Image (cartoon, rainbow, N blue to C red):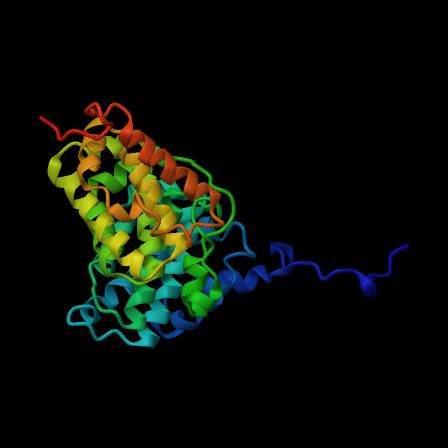
Length: 331
């Protein structure tokens, strides 16, 4: 017989959480006087209350209260006066929206209501202060959860709590196994709401962590056939993506980041699946991806090395050469 005293501690489950407290906090969201504390407490309970998303979605006035939190800080983003306190508070609201975005029972309704559009103004911001950086990162986390619920480490390196303050780390902590539920619906939504230019802006000027999440979103769009066709449909779209990726490679050669490089290479590899993009990449693929610039960064990353080798092979196949084996310029 096992002693209870020596048993491992049991993780907190819904049965152990005071359900009445959860209902009380949800009710308190509707009152401006009690909302801030309720946001904080509920955001802490996201992982331990599996049905929190339906509870939030179906309770009267709750989503409106969360949207009010978002809209309330619009005046603080232009001109950029957002404080750390404001950022932490809205990140707690975004954490609850992310909970709704990732739950299979509420994801489609969340998308149909176009709620991610309320976050797009945050992605437009360019201020490099920490409050803005956490705001952008948490907003990206909601979009990742909407489309690619519980992203696996093979797809996106884990974001650790050391990267973020507590309020934002809950929102941007993207762990677990990749589930593709309703992914086509999400891709279509993202393509029709101009998320790509917003991601490209962050990929160009965000922090390393924000760049990684934004590049991951672009990668997921590219891996979808509709997304790849959309980006390669016009020269303007393709050249914008290729230009930003090229700038990122140049920056990565100076300030290496293995996790960011992984997603950049995967984007290039996927672009090379499109015949027109492949032809263009033969002319514009950065030299740093063809030589040994990143050999040291990738020495232990067999997956990215394999992707890079496949990319170079894809660009060499079908290329016309002269008798000495030197590629000829296009006619």
